Structures are given as C-alpha cells and as structure tokens.
Image (tube, rainbow, N blue to C red):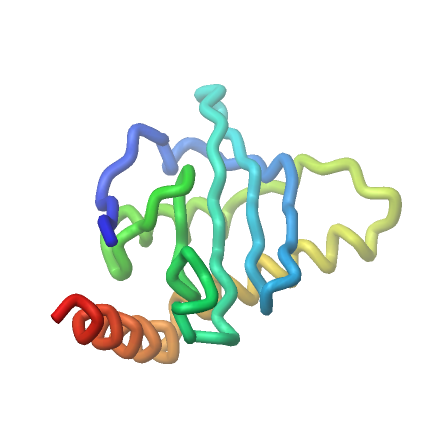
Length: 134
C-alpha cells in the first residue's frame, strides 16, 4: 500500500473544519477542511477498534489526506496533527452540545495517533501485510 510523505496542501496555513462526518464502522471520521489559501481538502481518521484489515479497504487507525494514506510518524503526519490541534470549527451547529461532541471526537483521534498504542498497532498491521505479500 503506497504511503505519501508530501502534499501540495499547506497545513501550516490555519485550518478550518467545514464539516465532520462519522462512519458506523467502529469510529472513522471524515473532516472536510479548508485553509486561508482557499485550498479545500479531506482528512480521514480510520477506525482503530478493529484491526482486522480483511474487512476494510483502508488501514485501521491511520490518517488519509485526500484519500491517500499518510505515512505514519512522518513529517506530513505530524503537520496534519499539529494543524488540526489548532483548527477552528467553521460549522453552524443547532446546539452547542453538537460542537462539543465533534471536538471530543477529533481530540480522541488526535490523542490516539500520538499514543504508543498507535505505534504498536501499526507495527502489528505492517507485519500482517508483509506476511500476506510473501
């Protein structure tokens, strides 16, 4: 599976989250984002509850930028994380509780990708992929 380490998206430009969608697959979220340079892009955090890859076309727990797998522990992944930590929600909510829920969902994903569990799970998944390719 090809991983990207560079992008034309300027992730240092302040990010605005325009929409947040959740999937019923164990926790994936999709962020529709924009920045001050008028670049629009999607950041997807894959669910990390089920690490059995046979059930999904994307790697569990990983970040995708515009549908491309971001290399784990890369400078690009770090830029995505740092950009989202400072991101503003630019969504009109009918109630404040929905904004709090979206922020909580995003914070959970950011904490996971900064955790030792993330590193451990990625090694497990990589080992599974390597065994399949033999």
